Length: 387
Image (cartoon, rainbow, N blue to C red; front, side, top):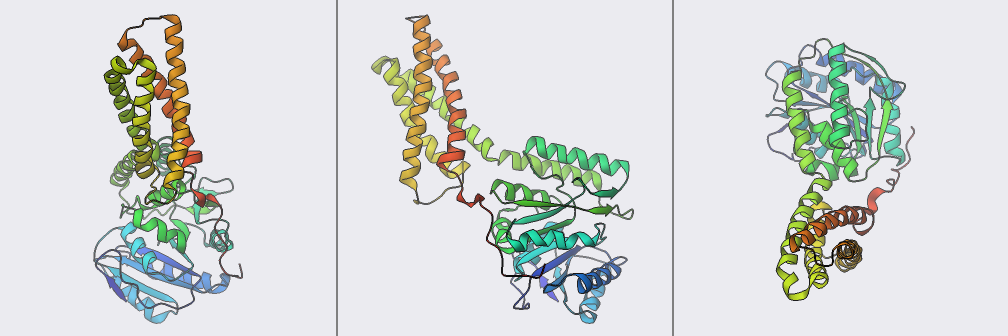
């Protein structure tokens, strides 16, 4: 047994060759743990022709769960135990996955609500190189789900919120049946802040924002009537997590930078217009704010750091600036055509509107061209496997 008190943990000795490690996070599961592990162990022995391991991640249980987990470790081959002294399912998964030498890390809830026959299809796209993340989905076509109306409504409402607020493209964030390639896990885990139930959602949202492929597997799923999850408190915590991710979204940061740039542009224009004239003042204000805007978006919105490609980024940003200059000067020309001597505040208002339009153009140009991530291609396949 390995005991973990800090995050991330120090890796424990494990087999040198391991295809998949399946983690079962548990807290006070003395009544269900043994039956679940025996059932999973039997299935893997019969149906999974890979080098596999089961890890029971006990996060601060206060009943007999640790003793039962240790007994299972002693009596079954390829079953290991990880003990954490602090609660949190996300914390348990982070600790187990961070210490794993497996090519693919996975987890499933101890109630085994998901039919285990979905496990090989879950792992196959990760081992083949098709995807970096794979999830079981109770909302995918072909799934068969048995659960009460209350949980059904809550689940669908939550996923609707994810699609609306976070622009999620995956269909089911909460199904306790997921797998991640080790290289993808190494990139994602340090960025995940939640240590409880929102861990799953944050994992998927961050994977999507990094351009990783998320493969969905339709599952047969039966609700556990003995589930002790506090739905209300979990839902509130999830909503707080959604708000946090929404504020941290690239588009949110870009809009914040855009608003600051627009205000700075308006102030610079008003300060310079009397000295340079409207056209030159607009160009100078845009030039100054464009350089700062590109630098801020490079670091804060798109997470690009260091001097690599710095010159190319600013050159491309200059081209985007010229497009913005065309939009703003065009708007100014239209205004002067309607009124040869408009009030200075009216000029500023028209230019602010034009600058906002240029901001939208700038975002799409920066996201799809200037700072486009090269890592959106499929991952390389792992070494040959029998699946």
